[in-house]
Length: 237
Image 1 (spheres, rainbow, N blue to C red):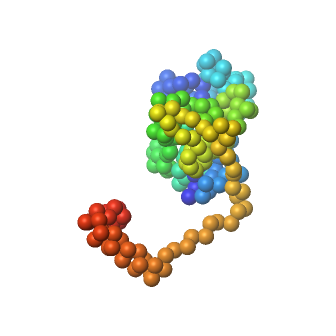
Image 2: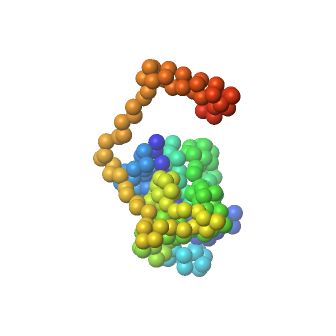
Image 3: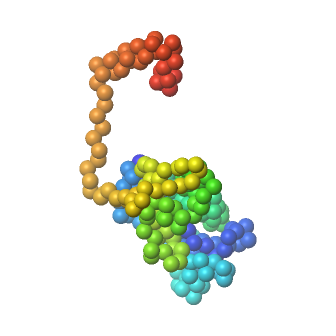
C-alpha cells in the first residue's frame, strides 16, 4: 500500500478569492513505512501573500520571487502522488487549493481525487477524540510526537510530523478514555518507532484447507450451541 502524506502552504485561505499555493511538501510511505522519498517545492504565486498567512508560515514574496510557478512543476508533482492514498490534515483545504491550481492549467485529468484517494486525519481525529482539540500540534502532544522544530508552519516539515502522528493514531491505543476525558498512564508516553525501509516484509501465513475446514466446523458448532446467533457466520455472510 502506497501512501503520500501531503501538506501545502498558501497565500491566504480561499482559492475562490484568488489565493494560491506557495509550498507543497510530500512524504512517501509504503506498507506503513516512511521510505525516505519526498517531494518538496516552493512556488511563485504571482500575487501578494496575506500578512496573516506570512505570520503562520513565514514565507515572503521576496523569497518566492525566483521560484517556479505551479504550471512548471505540475507534471512532477502529479507523478509523485499518482495512485497513492493521500494523508492530509484538514484535507478539504489542501485538496481545494490543488484542484484550483489544476483547473487554472486547464488540466484534462480532472480533480485530484480522480488520481488519488484521500484520508483526512482531522476528520479521523475528531471521530477518535470528540470534543477535544485536534490540531496537528494537539495531536503531537497527545501521541508524544516531537514537534519542537515547528516554530512556523512548513509544508515538508508538517508532512513529516503528520506521518508520525498518523502512524501513532492508527497503530493502537495511546490513551484511556474515562468519563469522556483523556488520561494517560503516569510517566508513560506512547512510543513512536519508525520501521526502516530496508526491513523485510512481514510473512503472511495463510490457513491451509484442513484448517479452513476445522474453522467452518467450529463455527457450525457455535451456531448450533448459540441458537443461530454466531456473529462470525453473520460477518462472513
